[in-house]
Image (cartoon, rainbow, N blue to C red; front, side, top):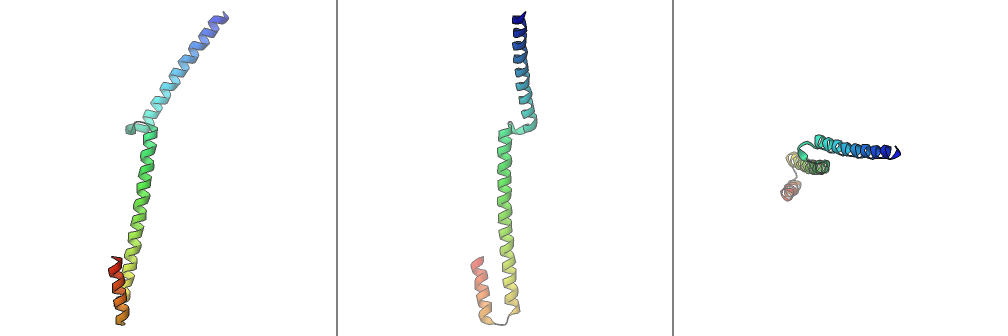
Length: 96
């Protein structure tokens, strides 16, 4: 009788392990979708975040450079000092 109970317990344990593994695989497929695996999905998301940060950094640099160029052009337009105008124009030329 004890042997039957142990055999039944082992069979139940094996069944539960199989069911849990299958459940885990199905859950991973459902969460990962077209990515295939959660690892691949996480890697793709990290890469997308990295590219987004790079894009924002570059965009901010371009914005700040354009802002500086506008300021330099405004200073050229405001001043009557020809030396200052020439230096500002030279600065704009070197920055482009």
